[in-house]
Amino acid sequence: MGVSAGPARIEAELDGRGRTVLPVLAGAGPVALRQWRRPPPGEPAEVAMVGSMAGPLGGDRYGVRVTVGPGARLRVTSVAATVSLPGDGPAHCTLELSVAPGGLLDWRPEPVVAAAGSHLLLETRVELAAGAALLLREEQVLGRRHDWTSGAGPGRLTATLTVRQDGVEILAQQTDLGPGAPGWDGPAVLGPHRALGQLLAVHRPLHPPEEEAAPDGGAVLLTLPGSGARLLTALAPDALLLRRLLTGREGPAHREADGTGATQRQAQPACAGRLPRLSSEAR
Amino acid sequence: MTAALLLLADGRFPAGGHAHSGGAAAAVAAGTVTDVPSLERFLLGRLHTVGLTAAGLAAAAARTADPAELAELDRATEARTPSAALRAVSRRLGRQLLRAARAGWPADAGLAALPAGTHHPVVLGTAARAAGLTDRRAAELAVHEAVSGPATAALRLLGLDPYQLVAVLARLAPQLDLVAERAATATRLPAASAPLLDLYGERYDSWKVKLFAS
Image (cartoon, rainbow over all chains, first blue to last red; front, side, top):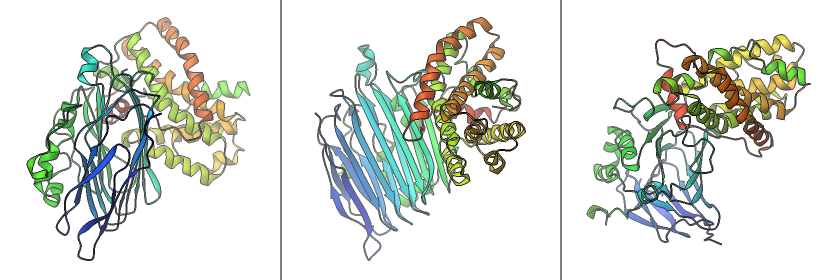
């Protein structure tokens, strides 16, 4: 049996002076939480998720629950890629993200990497009030470099993303990638690519891809049903090229609003499976 | 009820499906579907992703004649189709199928009450119910369409050997039954998606000259 933990919890709300504070910041299971800075009024509070154990390992059950109150602004990142490792059956991770009217959640963790032999069931449920803003990045990487050079191949990643806005479902999708998922590497699903990424923006600017994409890859900007919701979907051969497709798409309006330091940090491509160093400004 | 099933599944049923390739035309143009083996992998992926999702929606629609529940399923289809271009295709196909189904079963109140522009899987499920078919049959119709339309389109675009295509479709047949079974018995509406099909659907929409509408 693996780790079984209730969700780590983050609650963000406005104090009386227009500052976002975090009355609840509680790590659980393999997820430890660190607040990086106390924001000036109008700017987001920043929380980093730190993996406090290896994994997830097969059989683990864990999750994160985030609640952003009315008018509050919260950014959540992670300090390293999440590497899903084999174990006793599939691992389950549940992310529950909810944003109240006028609130903003900027959720941009590092990629999830499916190591050889692993199976992670990742379920993300987003609940947005009318007028709530969201920026959500999800990156799925099939296999570590070592898995490919050793011939072991990737693990499996089954990821479900559902988004409700004002009580109405505006996005429901499940990707099932890796060995055991029929047709996953065929020309209807991933083709030759091994990294899949999405940037979902609701009431936030999101720009179309700049580069002339290869006909069977690159990024495409989709307009979702609902109000002000757009999804950039990107396919790339590896995590680095994927991050390049997803970087800077959120647009200058976002940088002005949220501070450039954090944007630079986001722009550093993550090397899957290796722990990126915390930049000095982050400490 | 087998005859009604065959009528709805017949390529000659005037529902407009023949004008659509389900992403196969874009995949052929992108050079990812070039021959029979790559077409087989394309069809397998399509079947287990958007095929499963459409079948789940069609099966759910076949279980009800309640306009509110059908409207809810229409919204569920919308949420499961992130590409606006593919949502438009699904509504267009739904409109054409609705016209043909109303001609076939004019007394059915559920078909009469469906709004124009209802998504294709919801119309398909309703048409199946009107024809006296079960939810499982509705799912079978959906997976059949998910595979046979793109297969025929690729055959024409690539000039493949039709006998080799028959071999592919016969090999896939047990998989179609499996997916239809999963779709009809799912406790949660399936939402399986295929990233490349979304990308193809959106990009193909902007082409000026094309043989297929999608």
